[in-house]
Length: 365
Image 1 (tube, one colour):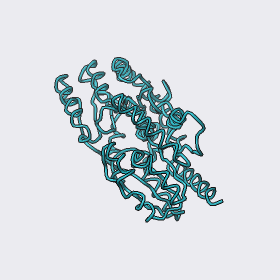
Image 2 (tube, rainbow, N blue to C red; image 1 turned 90 degrees about the vertical axis):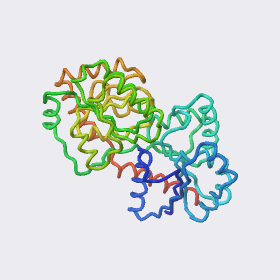
Image 3 (tube, rainbow, N blue to C red; image 1 turned 90 degrees about the horizontal axis):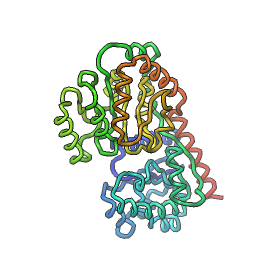
Image 4 (cartoon, rainbow, N blue to C red; image 1 turned 60 degrees about the horizontal axis):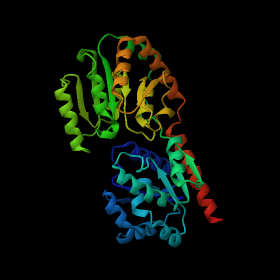
């Protein structure tokens, strides 16, 4: 197959969605498929909308001559109207790859209203859908309020550290060693990830009882990062909290090894690759009830789910885990077991490739 992939921005950008795209491209090429990446410059929503009329996107896609076109749904404002022309002139299937619906993400009500209208129109123009979780597919179905087009679910995998082998003894020893509770948050410092919730929870605990490391970009929402730094200073947390910036590769693996648990009190996660990554290292995870965290975290078994913004409940959980290290060890052992049952990248990407092949074959008949 010759597959076109339409994305917004740089494929090497740091986020779960771009990692998913890179893994998919690498897998398809390893199976002998040709993949042409068509990239739109990062722009605001209004400028992407204008691409339907003023841009040369159709010509770029036509020049690539793909058999099928995958569109990362982040690009939806640029093609929600243009897709009719793409289908008519190029006669190829168009597949939406949906990591996160814009109308679900945090935004003012008037923006979500616009996003909902445009996204619904966009999803009505595609021939198939790849969703990254059961939750995402359910939300797409609610948005379309009708029958879904052909679709598949291919969850992101967490096997990004192939050489790692953590055993139960290591998890037990780490949990039972004396000292502060070492907490890790892996995510860009943006409001949706909920770092402010975690900091408010930690302010309920004695400072000597914990250490928090935050691995993620600090340049995406400068106003929010400024608020976080003020919160850290005003709460007297400067010695207990480390903002590390982006961390990758073996350095990130070391962070997972060194910490007791991952805490991500996000306002919403469409899946959560880092949840699965953490489980590979035997880390329990605390997430929220919003989004797809429930697909990974089993309440009281390998982690916990709190309501978004509920810093009081989070603080109580952290107190419990600090003082009950046997519970922490049991949750960590269960996290290791849960990781073993998660699909790996090869299985997820193979499912996508089979789905794409079926769409190409169906179109040619």
